[in-house]
Image (cartoon, rainbow, N blue to C red; front, side, top):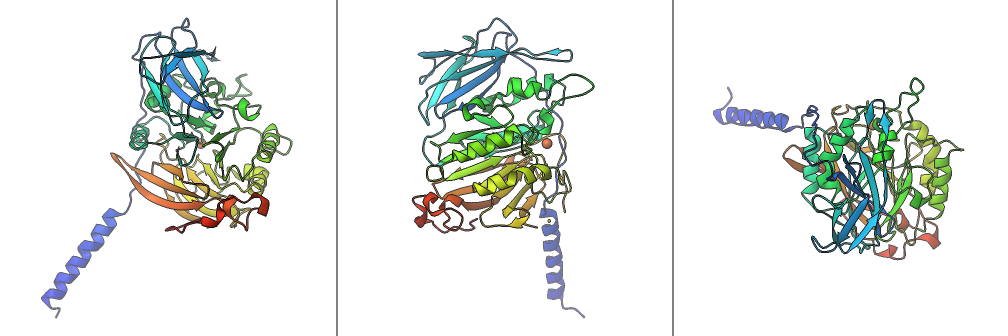
Length: 441
Ligand SMILES: [Fe+2]
């Protein structure tokens, strides 16, 4: 017969195992779409967003219902004192029976790095402010994909905003308007408190296509290209669908690639990409990042194989250039791979990270697994802090509703500091001082 203290131990063990089961992560369901209506006068700016244009300029974009408002930005370093002004361009578009309001794009600068500027759009309405990115390391990027406009999006945005950062990278699928154009306006209003104060750099996802060709003669990306104009001309790209930009005085070069623009051997995108990479000097640019929408490596059931054609066409160029990290969205989950090239672990290949879990209405992806080091189907955002020429810290924050939790973090070492991956004349000048970390890739 069992002694009483054995029975007590058994009950305690059962209680512990029950606690472990209940503490395991349960995938949350999608939440309702938020529709944000305009509450401002017709002449006042709405949907204000900013993006980097070259090393020391910022583009400010906004929309007015009043078509007489000029594309004018007044700005300065002191609140309410606007000693500089700039004018830009406006555009609009039609989509079936929807006619957009006036979309303004104004480029301002030159601006000082790591500095707060106060600005007003169109000569009316409230004052906004943004901080320019630093011209030296460290620099911190937020990476979040497939944002959408649900209550999950709102909590992800509040988590992003809870700690400072320098710029945000969005690997596609912004509004989930899916041809219902007023949802683009609603999305612009939802993100304005964030997009007006830090630069957001985007590339397109499948939800930006919005084309019904060949039934209706609607060009794809009409709304995205009109509203989310990115600095493609500054990187000699012929299209808003793919471009590159430098950060921290070219310490990082970011390739914003187009999963839904042609990437074949004779395509404009591949020609542009090869020319762009040829211009990257890794002694000056220790960090090289790439962003796509559909992931090239994916162990989830959802969207399996959708990035494969692009991988076959483009992966070799990125590998030869020793790209450090490839970020993707599209799959509504978080997943981090080891360094990989051509479907094999490779110490000189990029780390692939899928972060398509901003908060969209479609819910989260399911699973099935090699080279995958961490995977979880929950909403969240990532932070890449490039500390110096050799080290960067990546952390993925799960969205646990009212708070966020770091679920995956790793120290990365730039390939430019790896003698076995770089030609000797291209190795980062300070590569000998690499410090050890908890986990380093
Ligand atoms: Fe997508």
